[in-house]
Structure formats: C-alpha cells, structure tokens
Image (cartoon, rainbow, N blue to C red; front, side, top):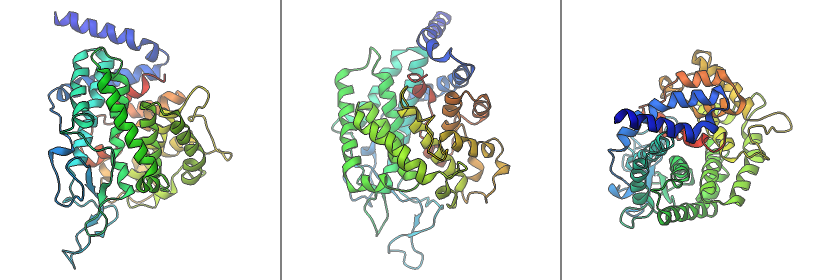
Length: 393
C-alpha cells in the first residue's frame, strides 16, 4: 500500500510539474536537488503548532500584543551610561536583543514555504490544511493575528520606538505570500480565508506605501531599498495590485540598478560595510528575486540593462567567482559569520534557470540547502525555490 501511495505521489508530481521542469536540464536538477530536502523538512513542519506575535511580548515595546516588535541589531548598552540610550557597533549583533517575534516570523515562513513546496511535489492536501492552520493564526484569528503594520520594528532603547529600517524584518513574509498563491489552488483551501489573507496583505501594502517609515525604507540607498521593492512586489502580486507591480519594475530599472550597481556588477554601498561579503550576497539575492517576481514575457527584468550595461547578469557574474571559491574575495573577511557564507543562494538558482547557466546551478547544488545558523537563515528569505519557479518556467 505504501508503495502504491509513493507511486501515486510521483505520478501526481509528474503530471503537475512535467511542463515546468522538462524544458531544460537546469530545471530537472532543481527538482532532483530539492525534493529530498523538502520531504525531510516537511516532516518537521507537520508537527508544528502555530506561534504568532501574541505568544511573547517585550517590556521595551511601545506597541501592543498584536504588534510586531524587534530591536536594532547593532545597538548596545553604553558601558559609560548603562541606563542611557544604546550606542552603535556596526556589524556586531547584540545577543540580548528581543528576537522572539523575528524568530516566530521566520519559523512561520519556513513552515508555510516547505508545506507549499511539499504540496507541489506530492499533491497531498494534508499539507494544505496544516499550512492554513498557521495562516489563519497569523492573519485571520482575532486572538492571535498580527497587526498589518510595522510601527515598532528595530527599535533602539532610549532613541526610537520603531524605525523604517525595521521593515526589512518582513522579508520573511514573502514566501508566506507566495505559498498562499500556490496553496489557494488546492481543494482544501478555504476561499473565505484566502480572501481574508489577501486583505491583510493589501492593508500592509497600504501601510508600506503611505506611512513615513515605509517611504523612508523605499528611499534607502542600499539593500534596505532593494528589500522594500522585493517585498512590495511579492505582496502586490498576491493581492493582484498591478499598479504597484509596475511601480516596482520601474524602481528596479531607474533607481536600484543605477544607484546601487557599479559598472563591474558590484554593490559599492555594501562593500563599504563591516560585512561586505554577506551584504553583497544578500543584496544580489534580493535583486535577483525582484527579477523572478516581476519578469513577464513583455518586460523581462533578467534581460534588462541600463544604457551603460548594468543588469542582473553582470551582478551575478561579478559575485559568482567569490561564491565558487571564497578565498578569492579581495576584501577583509566579514567581522561576523564569515565562515557561514555562502549557502544555496537564490541568485544562483534563479539566475541559472533564467540564463541556462549549468555552472551556476552546479555550484548552487553543492552548497548547503538547510543552513542552521540563525543569522544566515534571517538573511535567506528565499528557501523554497520550487514555489517560485512553478509558474514562471
């Protein structure tokens, strides 16, 4: 009986995904690489109970029970004035910060992302039902839902109750949004719940595009500005907000590429940081994800170049040699987490499929697909490429 079930699952996968992955060896390799990872991880996800922002609070938060709260990573107590405002140590994470909400959101993203991936692979409705337990808790249930705003993210004791820079914390809702797009096609998906989830994201988009914090983040010159576009693009696609998707395409072309990428494909603003390697990877992941979300048959951001030749392919080509062999990195090692990068970066898999680059995909295949270091996971919002590739290949 178990053999028949497994055979049925494989046949279901073949029927569902053959038009997607049969088109190239690169796509087939994505499937064969990720399938065992997904099916191992989903066993964990099936055992998890929903945990939202209401499960734990901080006395340092100026918000309420339903408000997401986090603290600026690089801010520490002043040893000369322990009760005074925190002071900055760039690149050095304060281990005593409140991180429970951030961890809960990352956990939520992991759960929904892998359940959606497993559903794509197996067509098993039990994964859908488990995912909607978590989705309902975060976005629908009045007792546990999160408010659709980010007023209290990356606060700094004695200085700010929240900052626009904190909007980067919700990059982990992108795989949730994409997971909903995949799961809503299932028989077990409740249309009323899906509509409520869409309303939550529509409300959050309104906040992201109208509140001063959102505007500040949109205008940030480095990876924060990139991540604003990436998030808005992902949430706008879920809510079918074509006008915002157009805004994001134009911003990628006219702001992100010309303002952040140098002629050689590097990101000078990231190279100036105390963790230039990790930040360069993170920003390239985000820009490539923007291309993955927003590219259409008539407006392919992967192919787009500025008049002087800057584009996502050049960005990948610049960084790839340092991913393949980190010892070639020309700058000093990052002050923290140097030994933990790279992992299976999404820019490698998205770029490899878009440009039919077997070498990039070969490197992606051999890197770690299930990192365990918290800081790496926090800076790796795309962990389930299957759910991003199913519609666009």
